[in-house]
Each structure stands twice: as structure tokens, then as C-alpha cells.
Image (cartoon, rainbow, N blue to C red; front, side, top):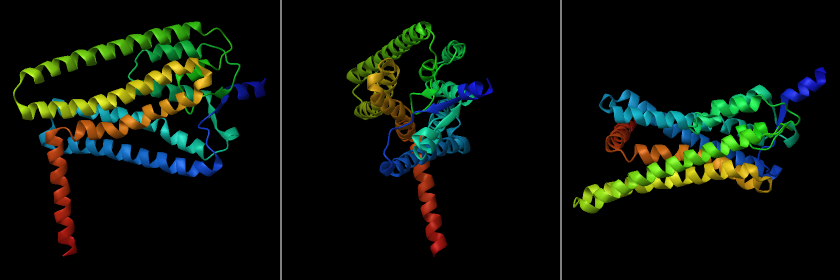
Length: 274
């Protein structure tokens, strides 16, 4: 009984399927992405926090985005990089750790209903011990059960469709209004700024939306597991790396502070060398 309990509480994470020769290059690539994303997001938070001229509601809202990006990358990437350097048969994680990781993965996805989803999942008994994903999420957790998981599938799909529909609808309405203002406005500078900002935002949004939709729906189709894994990783590393550039550098006040900080450092370095 004790052995059964221990086995039932230790899960095997499938992880990424990489060859031993490519494990180190993949590790280095993911490490560089992680360092870049963390550096950009932490730098943006520090800049907004220390510069009194940026202590405005709009800029404080910008702080929420990098904090969420830091959470999203940290909850997944370090563990994934660690597993890449391990043998496939040694990528263990406890059930409790897996549930905690799945919870924060979905907090990153801004889906508050996952408190209920996680609750629906942990009530299930478990007859399997392998997480069929590079990291733990709710869908991977309920796949551990041999019980009927129709409730989880139906609830998850319905809510996902609702969220995606609302998200697409709000974005469509917002950009329709922006387009209408640009068409009626004769201010070329304002129109150019709007197009530049909206274009970069749309690019990040499309990546996030496509990755998230692929990740959610392909969980129901095991034959496309490799595509799902790639989409799930992209969802956690691409937006956190691009968001500080898109939302930070596109903001005039933040951009000016960064340029001022950079020029001040160059002057100090020249003074020290002299």
C-alpha cells in the first residue's frame, strides 16, 4: 500500500522530445529567452517604480503586464530547462507540485475560472502517472484519471469558447473605433502613431491567441501532441519577451526615460575612462 501511494503521488513529466545532441543547444536557447524576458520585464518595473514622472495610473497599469509575464515564464521555463538536461525516465514531479504549477500556469492565462477547474480535477482518482506535456496544466492533470472526465472537458471547452469570443469581440470593437477615428482624423502624426502601436499589439495578440487556442484544443487530439507542446511553450515565452518592447518602448514617456538613462550611463563610462 505504501509503495502504491508513493507511486501515485510521483508523476513523470513527458517534457520535450529532444535528442541528447540537441539538449544543450535547446537549453541555451531557452535560457537566453528566459534571461531576455526577465531582464526586459524587471527593467520596465524598476524604471516605472523609480521614476516619479511615471507614477501615473496608465504606467502603473503597465506594471501589471510585466508582473504577469514574469509569473508566466518563471512558473514554466526553469522547470522545463531542468528537465531537458535529464533523462526522459528521470523527469519526476510530485502531484502537489504539479497542481501548484498548473494553477499558476492558468493564472498567467488570466482565466479565473481555473480555481473551479482545478477543483474539478483534483476530485478525480488517478490511475496514470505520466504528464503528457512539457509542464503541468489542468488538461494534463485530468488525463491522469481513468474516470469519466466529460464534465471537465465540457466546462473547459465552453468557457474557452466564451473567453475567446469575448476577447475577439472586444478587440474587434476597439480597433474598429480606432480605425474610424484614423479615417476621420487629418492628423498624420496621430494616425502614424496609432497604426504603429496597433500593429505591434495585433502581432503579439495573434501569437498569444493562436498559441493558446492550439494548446487548448489539441489537448483533445493526442496525435498532434508535438504541435500542442510547441504552441504551449510559445505561449509562455514569446509574449513575455515582446510585451515590454511593444508596450514599453511604444510609450513616449518610458522611451524618453530609457534614452536618458542610456545616455547618462554612456557619459559616466566616458568620465570613468578619462
